Amino acid sequence: MESGIRRKAAHIGIVACSAEGAALCYRTICAEAPARMGEHAHPEITMHTHPLAAYMASIRAGDWPAVAERMLDSCRRVAACGAEFAICPDNTIHQAFALVEPRSPIPWLHIARGVAAEAKHRGFARLGILGTRYLMEGPVYPDALAPAGIAALVPDKADRERIDALIFRELVNAVFTEDSRLYLNRVMARLRARGADAAVLGCTEIPLLVRPDDAPLPTLDSTRLLARAALARAIGA
Image 1 (spheres, one colour):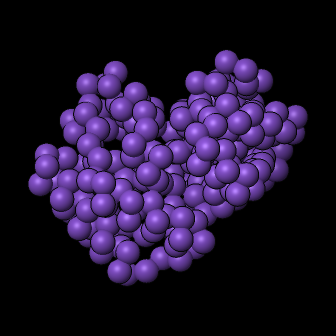
Image 2: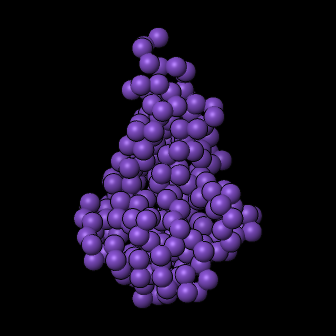
């Protein structure tokens, strides 16, 4: 056994979509693992992604079966490398999850269900959802939150369109500006005024922009919550 590795961990498969969110998820697992596994230790991790352009062509066409096929292809590749379960650090493509899970060669953790569990644990009842237009207008979070008795609230149409543009023009390209950060704070303030008691950072790049200590609402960081859930699953915690 190598020095510092205290336990055998399960091999994590990352089915990635956009680079920045996937990288944050990967870095979080690797950075937080040593405190639980020993110096320099983290689970084995295999990641595969199809180009974001390929995903976006299917998403824009509303072709969720095609999205599912790409997710399954990535999942099979990481499973072939030894991954024992899979995660996907992208909220939007979880809209295809129901088409993926029954055909997957390995189990998955669901990003929004993890957020729902954390929200319930912290006593939140009405979550503002920030993410792509497809996520904010889609079923991923309403479906995940409803069993926990938690309501989902989305920004108005103008804000949804602006947030979507911000994500695809800036965040997925690693452009993080103060103007955009302050704009998201204003959106969260408007959600708070409508009754939200926390905000879901439901684009996996948004946590790279929003500062929780400066946000008008408590934040639920979907990327890091997924990474921590994967680490806990891998080490059997």
